[in-house]
Image (cartoon, rainbow, N blue to C red; front, side, top):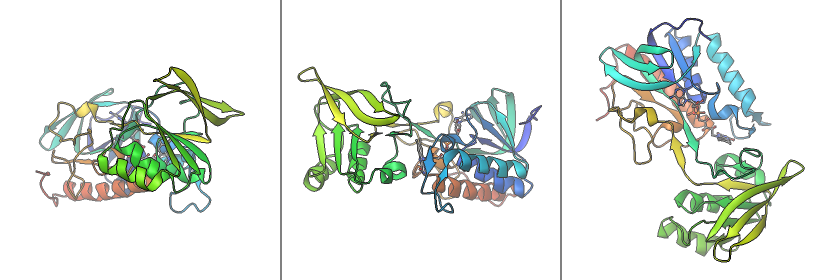
Length: 320
Ligand SMILES: Cc1cc2nc3c(=O)[nH]c(=O)nc-3n(C[C@H](O)[C@H](O)[C@H](O)COP(=O)(O)OP(=O)(O)OC[C@H]3O[C@@H](n4cnc5c(N)ncnc54)[C@H](O)[C@@H]3O)c2cc1C
């Protein structure tokens, strides 16, 4: 970590998850001076992922913490400096962009925003206790751990229905708990769920999720309430997937000219440049992201190469 943080930098990266750490490996290895700001844990969401089974190069899988640690060490080996702190505003001041941070005013010629996205939580007992150890938010990441097992899925929107259908590849049976009396998902998805997956999926409308219960450190059931009768209902399960929305970490861009899409993810062009020249975005915070570590790492390396071109004056204008 930096003892005293310089104010002017070649590149500042916001967030120190897989996307930024990878980008920093590329920039610092090419002697482009780089400072990263991280408001939470270095390694981002990867650092809190129990077990990563789908990151290439690790045939037996790897813990998220070990993967995050390796990326962190590799970035620091080439000279990346990580400052623990938060960025709260970016403004374009021409050659240098101005950043308001918890360490004061900072300036950078180029910025990479890789602040990721958080999954919305349902806030019930058991959810955080068994986070990533029975309670999940990403079917692509963790669905395959539930081959021939029972699952509960919580949610009623497009992503809940879509991900439930995906999870039928693995699970023997899924109870889908929907708080309202109907889905918010599109008609097409609802029809597909009914026509192709009713053998494995039981939909429970008007059902709240009240508690996730574990025995011997293993999730065994969800307790819900049937709102039409007011009665408690037990749903025996081996795991729970929650799909109630995404919260992109872009609140700090609220008053900036950097354009966001309808759910608040950052729009970029094919060079990963945002609508502010010299400001790039990569990973889970980017509109179109696939919310996977391998993709975040790929986008981080692409962004670093585009940033180098930008600093050398060989880059296209900002996205229109
Ligand atoms: C439980 C769980 C399991 C997962 N399992 C897998 C898996 O098995 N395989 C897989 O490929 N993917 C998995 N993922 C997804 C994967 O973790 C993400 O796709 C990946 O971490 C995204 O990397 P990122 O660098 O874009 O963002 P993140 O990892 O989210 O990092 C962003 C960082 O930015 C910081 N930040 C945010 N705002 C600010 C700010 N204003 N100032 C300073 N810092 C800021 C955050 O604290 C965070 O550390 C999982 C995710 C979760 C939650």
